[in-house]
Length: 260
Image 1 (cartoon, one colour):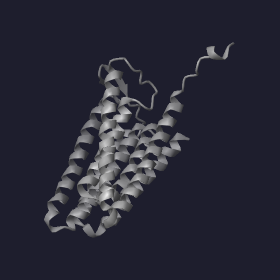
Image 2 (tube, rainbow, N blue to C red):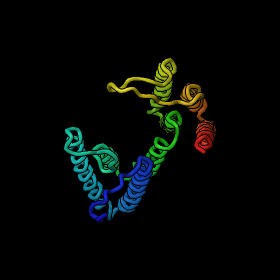
Image 3 (cartoon, rainbow, N blue to C red):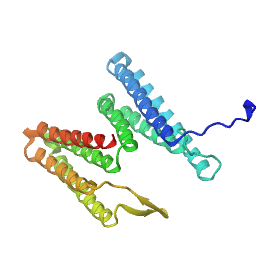
Image 4 (spheres, rainbow, N blue to C red):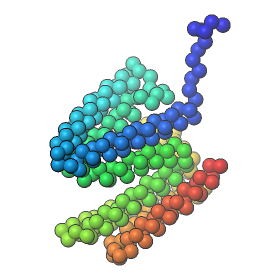
């Protein structure tokens, strides 16, 4: 058979997922390296203006990429472009652009301050993406609960350290309680339907494991309790955050073993 007539072997779903995860980690690593360069520029008076100009240029690049993502989405929705198993599709380009715009806009507005937070945010996003594609759906939700709980604990701690922002600590506790109540309601509805529901005319089955509903009920309540503990016993903030991290670690080990 002639070489030109041999069809290209289509990429499998597993290979596609692996390539997506590797791409996300690579992009996040590149983002961290860019942030390190920006911080170095912004740390010195004689290069501060250059750093701000670079951030502004990257903000503009992010806007251009976002527009390209919208164009790709429109073409894909109209059937002019096939996005099946394509890493460079409209949705992916748009999401990456939004993250880039948010990061650069925060630096342009507040200077080097947000960079330290972004150092943690980018790897966390990459890890969440890996969890979403590699673990059970309930564990992904558990990681979101734990991440939100730890973030709210940190916010409460910071707010209590500033006299004029004590109200933020109470607002953070309120947010933790609201998130817990909403999740408990949703979990109750899913339990009654065995994890199945209709979305855009299609039947979706979350395929939750036997203990999923128990874990999804306990986790948000635990996080709300730990946020309250930080608010009313601020001296034990490290213990509360450590307890949340230990809970997440133990849960991660459990679901990792289940994958084997």
